Image (cartoon, rainbow, N blue to C red; front, side, top):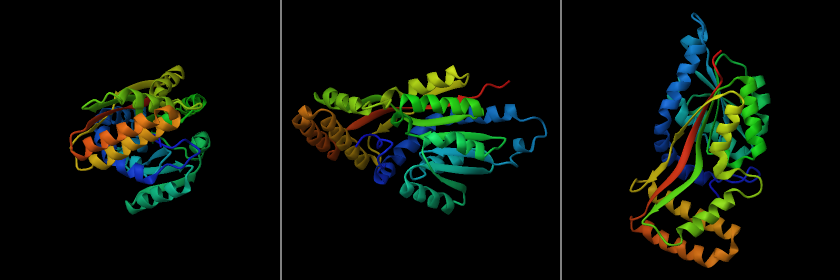
Length: 288
């Protein structure tokens, strides 16, 4: 299994749960992007506009909502009342996200659909302040989907906060001589078919800028060491990379299995540290 499942395959809920604490820690680095987003809304609001005083809810469309972790984290950092449109093609995950949102008392609307439905969803939910967001999704899209996403955001003049996209950087300490082979095969697997994989951050930033959006990119890496949640996440992270490497390059089967055995021993002994590169992208419509 890769960082996520391909768009036509279900995302494993247990993987989403394992990565949630690492995601939450990494996203602290993106708080300045949220502050910039709020300033953008303030600049657009005329004096006396009730939406600027918090009377009107922010409508947030969460693409690939998964189990709802993106909503749970981001809702705490956005101002005023909010209405969340949770969009996912996986009914089981969507049901879980909606249940978690309603348990939190959130105003939530579920939409069983893929990212290609974003334009329709935005047209059905007009509001003075809107936001499109996603977490760990962009690397699963194709170039065409990235371009379409940028087009819809530009045409609807909606800001976007696109979080936690892998950028291809993986540093394991201590190093192992098979790291380049296994991790390289995994990255090649990420680009299988038409998926953009680790080119996603660059491509979405370019596509948004070409559409006239103002773009800011900030690194949000995972730092995995001795945290209480680290070991199960690392074990799954390593196993998924070995599996994907073998799937992509069967000739690496023996080496990948040997690498995984060694790395799991390192993990069990508490001596393995990992840095996994991610980035958050903020796209803002220009203020006229």
